[in-house]
Image 1 (cartoon, rainbow, N blue to C red):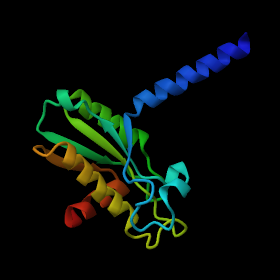
Image 2: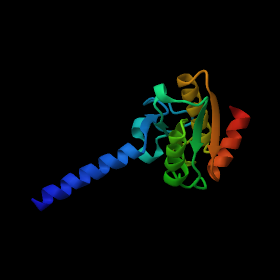
Image 3: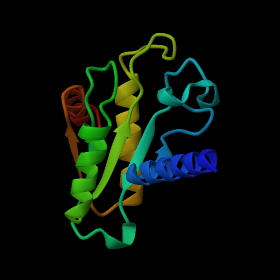
Length: 156
C-alpha cells in the first residue's frame, strides 16, 4: 500500500510540474534542424530546441506578445527563474508569453556552433508571428539570453 501511495504521489507531482511549464512546442520537425549534425530524433531531449507557450489565444488582452529568452552563459539555460517565472507573470498581466529553450553551442551537435541559438530564436519569432500576425512582438532576455535577444534584433 505504501508503494502505491508513493507512486501515486510521484505521478501527481510530475503532472503538476508539467502543468506549470506551459504548453511545449518543438521548434523544428523531426528532420529539419538547421545547422545540426543530427536529426531531431537522434538528439537528446535537452538538445532539442523548444518553445513553451503561456497563452490562451482567445484571452490575450494586450497588443504585445513576449518572447522570453533565459540566460545561462551559453553553458546551460536558466529556464525556471529567468523563463517560466517571467512568462507566468506576464501571462497574469494579460500578455501572451513564450519561453525559448534554445540549443546550447556544441560542436558535437552543430555544424557551426556560433549560429544555433540565433537560428532557434529566429524560428521562435517566426512561429509566434504566424500565431499572432496582428500583434507586436517584444523580446526580453537575461544575461546570455539578453545577448541573444540583442543579436536577434539585428538579424530578425
